[in-house]
Image (cartoon, rainbow, N blue to C red; front, top):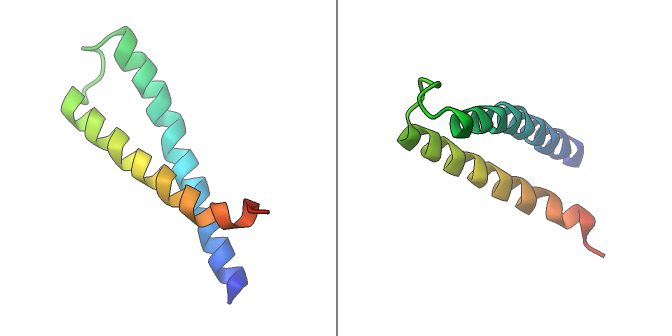
Length: 68
């Protein structure tokens, strides 16, 4: 059962990384040319907050594996 939990955690980590990479690229493009992207600033900030939540959840899930 622990193996399935670990696999689920790893899949969630990969999903989070998969979302962070395009978001960071889009953020750089949004900073360089603010009117170039169709996503307005409010939605962009909300999506960033959701990604920060995902990062926090991943930190909580994997912090137990790195304790001494």
